[in-house]
Amino acid sequence: MAPQPRRLLTGVAGALLALGLLTPAATATALGGDDAAPPRQPVDAHRTTQPVVDDNFADPDVLLVGGVYHAYATNSDGQNVQHRTSRNLRTWTTQDDVLPVLGDWVGPCSFAPGGATDSCVWAPEVTAVGDGYALYYTARDEASGRQCIGVATSSSPDGPFQPVGDDPLVCPTAQDPPDLGGAIDASTYAEDGRLWLLWKADGNCCSKPATIFVQPLSADGTTLTGPATELIRNDQPWEGAVVEAPTIVRHDGTYYLFYSANDFYGGAYRTGYATAPALTGPYTKAGTELMTSDLFQGDVRGPGGQDVITTRDGSTAVVFHGWDPTFSYRAIYTSPLVWGADGVPAVTAAATRYEAEDGEVTNARVVADTSASGGEKVGGLDAADSSVSVRVHSERTTRATLGIRYANGSLDGGQRVLATDALTVNGQDGGTVTFLHTGWENWQRVETRVKLRAGWNTVTLTTATFFAELDAVDVDDHRLQPAAPVHPQDPADATRYEAEAGVVTHARVVDDAGASGGAKVGGLDFADSSVSVQVWVDRAGWTTLGIRFANGSERGGYPLAATHRLTVDGADAGLVTYPHTRWGNWQTLEHDARLEQGWNTVTLTRVSWYAEIDAVDVLGAPVR
Image 1 (cartoon, rainbow, N blue to C red):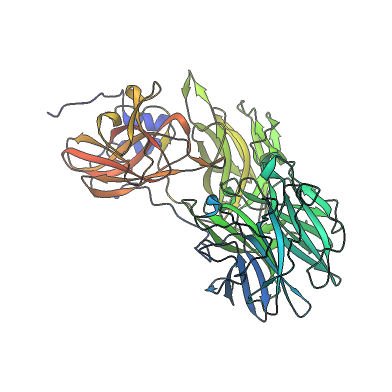
Image 2 (image 1 turned 90 degrees about the vertical axis):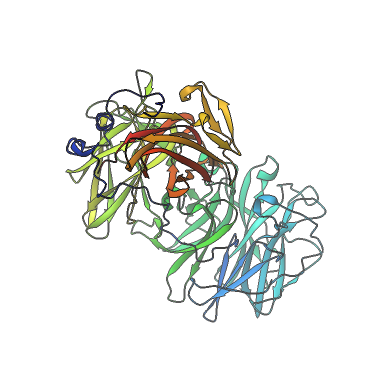
């Protein structure tokens, strides 16, 4: 008889049924010992949107010349302005630095968050002028110590470009008042034979507003010919301290100002837009952003730095950057950009978002919330008939994925609990949606697959158990990946093995009154950080392990999933993905692994981000 650690109470199948993770029919086999059937196994993280340049190529600008796309990007690997070419926007060839020599006004600078070789030469813009080309670039002004914009010219889009003048073109600092904090992110707009420069006053560098201006340029692009006109500044909660990277497109008589916002170094960086009847405004900001990490299912982190181009076939595309999974570099993505009949632009690679507060709200209320998409949410969904209905559109009858953005801080007798809603689509049963316990304002997505008919569809979520708040419904066509069950209460009839009693490598045991046993393993922050526990089973076979964890990982205010590699006696047993719960919000995630009879060494080794581990439970044979 093996020594037995602390055992929890009652039956695992009954506990899972109570949590809504098992159907009654499934309980008959929940504790079965049949080893022939395949187990439910979490799969590695998938990507629905792939980069076309999977390398550090931030702030892309694309110019089409003679059937060739020329892309220019922020400095990297010793190049001031990176340059790549393509004929299809998918396959790119690396070219030489197009700006090997900077203007005399540029001083030394380094900027670690942009990469180890970032020398502060940012966000180039190349445009055709007369018989040649003008390149606008951001660099560090030696006189003021601020970022400012310079211009260089060349007879070819391949460069090399030669700096123009001894001073920057745009540099609103104390040395060249008014002091707006410097200037970055130039772009151009041409209409009726006239050229305009868009630029951002970099006020967020020094506790000033971030402001986007437009200003007329000479025909050769080297001289400003009139005063700057303010278009927008950061005044929405979701923008944080930043609006930047302006791009203007005219469509059906309306001017669309696309811009990036929030902290560029985080997943909360995103792309918004504003519209105006004239180039110089006034501009009205849209209530919903064009691109966010959520709208790409987290596959593109911090989508921004965008450029909008007309392709060789006359269609419109958006080119933009996003961080790699480790936030080490910014890769490049492309997607068609289309407009609906109502003039609303959409990126086809991203989901379409429908705000819950714009739907029909029954026995609930719309509440202002700066953390919510669009600045509002539907709360007070507390009664049996509380519901919210949103109308979503589909071009054809098809299966689609709904991504429901929610927060759940429900408690039952002081215990954290799951919440559930009943889902209907056009009045037909769509099943039950289960919301993890995230805490309030910790917005997460739960996905479910539904059938939509061509045209408009009514999606209704009605309260079933407890009290999730709803922010938005996203619609796209990506297929769901299996997700491991996660629940906030201790599973029943499980054998628990405390993580702090195991072997801890390059991490530490930390006292925590909220953790099982009063301690946890934290500081799992390094590539070799791990915790190993010995667990016992009476016979060999597939076994469900319950990993009690908390994950508060985030970058720039954007919540991140964390991952560990699970091994059993040294053999790979899959990737464990922990949703964002916040620190101290302990949850149990289920993972199936094959164990041998007797003692087994279960090891969790950090892969990404920073989950803490409290305990490992042996729950029983997998549910099939």
